[in-house]
Amino acid sequence: MLLIGFYVMGLGLIAVVVGINILMCFSRAPVTAILALPFTAAAFFLVGRAFYASLRLRPREIAGVAVPESEQPAVWSAIRTAAAAAGTAPPDCLWIDSRFNASVYEQTRWLGLRPGQRHLVVGAPMLVALSPARLDAVLAHEFGHFAHRDTHLLPIVMRGRSGLAAALRTASFFKTANVSNGRWLVTVQILVVRLIHAYAVGFLKTTQKISRSQEYLADRISAELCGRDTAAAMLSDLPAYGAAYHFYRARFADVGTGLGLVPMPEELFAGFGRMLDESRWQTAVEAQRPAPPVRKPTPFDSHPPIADRVAALRALPSDGRPEDKSSDRAVDRFDDAAVLLAAVARSEAQRADKHAVDWDTLADAVARARARNIAGPLIAAIRMLNGTPATLAGFFDRVEAGQMEVVLHRMLTPAQVGYTTSNPAVALEIGARALASALPAWINAELAEAGLVRWKHSWAGAPVLDAQGVPDDLNEALAALLGAEPSQAGPAAAALRDILKGAGVPV
Image 1: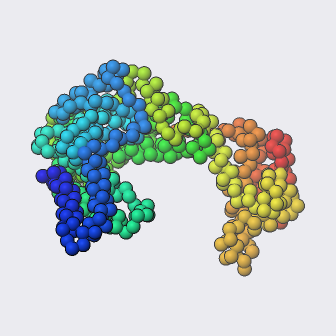
Image 2: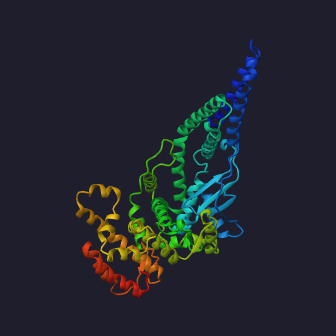
């Protein structure tokens, strides 16, 4: 009734507007009916747009790869098994995208009262992180959202929530800033949006309990297919794996996008698997399992806290099936898995204008850029002092000329200059600390440009500096310069300069 009531509300609004127009026509001033026509047209248009959005949701845009059953029969067999466990129909389409997520959605009509084509979307990183049994648990849970065990209205409720959200977005499309035909259209828009918003809020609040019950039902279906302990372990591990993937993208895969560099498509998701093989991430997943993260719920959140869902699964009677601890990966179910993962990587829009490189090349380019960024205060100081593009030779010229103190003062920020005006010794100490990080970074960057050092990729953490081409006495000379009194730093600078020059660095 709540879903049908949405259309009753909209039709009622139209009826009221039309009734007002009819009354105006029979009034003493029928010309007012003509003046009210724009109001009537606006009401019809906005309500019609909202109805259209709810009657047929727009197709989702999936940046991924479609996988037909003819190409991956083993995978589709597992999907059909999971759907059968939930007592619902299998999907019409399978998509693999690059998110750490899995979902089943339908292209519905009539606020979900009429189902449509069903799609299953599974993220490639989830295929890499989970074992086949745990992925089956995920799929069974997702299909469980369309199960009919407790009530035939559960699937309709889920579709209805999506339909009402689409109707609200469409009714809100016309922003006040884009209105140029008068205040009457603004008034109509506000009225329609407020009515739809109020109805949507009421629907979401009323169905929240049903939606949460459905999550628990989907979890039980997952446990029936794969075992209680495996379903609970999967649910506990997902947040840790999701966090690991977020870290992987930020620290490794996407770290070079600002430089126009990305990993080779064959390496994007394979690299995530290699990172997970590191003991630190295995430990992180195990540490998070006993206490899944607590997310602050929203007033309309349909998902109970993960800890509560895990506890509910653990409270089920033992089914005698052990927890799945296989090291196999679900992606290995796919024929030519490497080809599929590379295709998913190529489907990412952010790769369109980027250059694909191997991991070592990516790590080296990013580390060089970071080194120059760390050296930024010193580079800026030399540029301002000389009035020309900064070079390492320009720095040595200044220091050998007895101007180390000038360089250190120029490296201070305006705030540091302000509170050290009356204490020059403190100013020099702050400048010396800045130099201690900036100068080694600048030297490393120049050594890399000369081909004497190179950073190499490491899944354990930061790139590793391969300094086999560095002269043996370089670090000692650098330490001598950084430890020298500013007024007496000239000889140490000259010694370091000679070593760099002898190694082939243009100083």
